[in-house]
Length: 388
Ligand code: TRP
Image 1: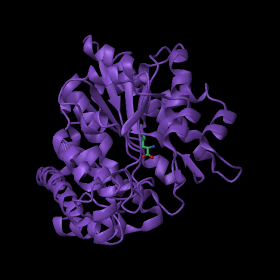
Image 2: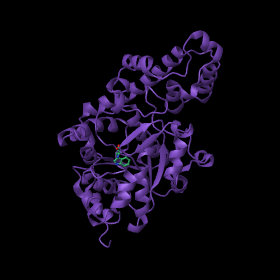
Image 3: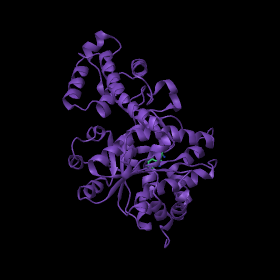
Image 4: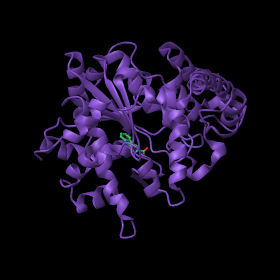
């Protein structure tokens, strides 16, 4: 296995997910927990894309008992959003609809300003607004969802001060892999994200908060768990996923950092563009020639198109089994598999884009206002932690 490196700000190399889980000290998700979830179970959960957790069982138990529970998942606005970015938000929506969870969505424009050398305040604010179009298109229930924008909702400064007093520099340096050259914003920002994870408990009441994220974000959950009970809150739970495979590698991460604009599927891509990208770039588990493919068969496990279907786009269990068998046996060729995958992705994007247009028609700021913190919630933030 080749070397790899995973921090919240950087993913390099071929990721060994089992090792990562062990290194981080998370658990694999027991089948019994999944089987307790309401049907139809979200595809990435059912098919193992979310593969590790912390206290997910306790979250499920609380939700089933009718206790208040919530989801926090956020976005660091460093550019436009692609397919991999939107998944946690559709996951949050599933938990809202099926299990009654409230949802809190932080936009960490501060984080991206601090860690991306080239970005100006103007840029992260503009990306924040652009990304909110996509996030609002997901269609959260405004009664049970709040959006917090770090550089605008400055109430979060108070709890951040309280939390930061309980986290040492050496923890942050080790957990996030900081160096002597890191600006001090990198040291402070983790306290902000810890507050994001605590916020539902502060603005509503103490409760189990679940954070569904790609495993690179686990360090934040870890440090939050260390502090939670010391500030009178329930320990944060985590639901950890693999990375959305990049088009060019089944074990890489969909990202613009290495490959560039052309090699990711943007949420605004039309059907023709999606098809072209899948055909041209999607890593194939097929054989170099048709003759060989017929004789030896394809390898679904490393085929990016197959993985997209398996984890995200083919709901039908019988159909995915059939595709897997036909591909493995050599009966199905890469071209046919890619064609099918491109159609499925375009279908999803078409629906997403339709809802996106609706947000724009109504006006982004108008829609966003429904999700802003209410006055009494802002008061709760100001009142929190006086005795700490
Ligand atoms: N740090 C995340 C990113 O880089 C964004 C984020 C901010 C987030 N706050 C969060 C994610 C809380 C999950 C939960 O994309």
